[in-house]
Picture 1: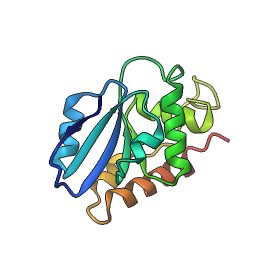
Picture 2: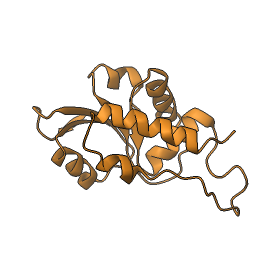
Picture 3: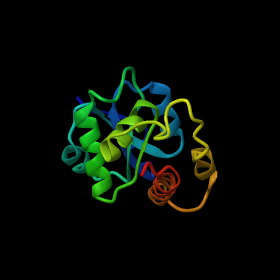
Length: 148
């Protein structure tokens, strides 16, 4: 069953897909004026979207992302609907698999990947909304780490 973290009067609403989230991550989001509704790992996009969040979060968790096909499909649907999305660790890998069906450096595991994006940069920015910052960050990430 879904559950809530944070103040219902917060300025941001985040729908979180729980792949094994650490409670402290949710607490840190809540401390930054976010109200989070945490959904089970197998919740489809339509259910998350019905809550009308400002952004979506796919959590960290144990294991490999390949078996998490519903999370991958959810990530793909979020982005196809032009909604902001961020993931941590396993959640980020599920996002990548949902979009590109590939994780890692296309040059091979032994080659250093010099292309990277530091999300700490956009997290420090004070201007704009979370939605705009997340959208820009994902666009920047997509432009920098193109696997084509």
